[in-house]
Figure (cartoon, rainbow, N blue to C red):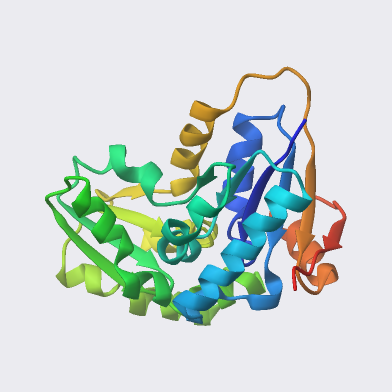
Length: 255
């Protein structure tokens, strides 16, 4: 059975992988962490587009994947519209799956990497598809590197969260989108700093809904293979800490 390829710069996409393996236990998955270029949030649009193209090309042509999932908001915001027509397999990102689930919101806050926030791609796509409310995008450049370190209780992480989220004290929101797949790992910290009435949107759930529209139902049990582009030993350690798995991580350097 052909696998589904999922990629991110690091551990963030594991939040999407977890959702998908629960919803589709019969599928085979390949998870690729582009650790060589981590983090994506400080890279240019041209770099992100090239990385994304190389990864999807590897999924389609080397791994024989039937689908690619960009479990990375930066790639989804900066690259997918450019590269999608180059491939015959479907590519699902983190932004378009949200479109049917935001129209009750009046003011949406988005926390994202700096590159993703600067692109304002969430706002552009939402507005192009009829959203009439306000969108406030906030870049959180230190979140991803700190989350990759794995200490979710660190004083530095709490300090950064207080700083980044402070804008939502003056600009009231009713909905917050986790605009980076790393951020659900610290959802308890984020949600403790914001009012209780806010609705939180994790793209992983809605990505799974998009995948369901494409996949046939299968009865067999699937598998997961893990790859990264540098330091598989370190990524394997992160995998144990975050997912509780001792699965082998293989090196796959696309360049």
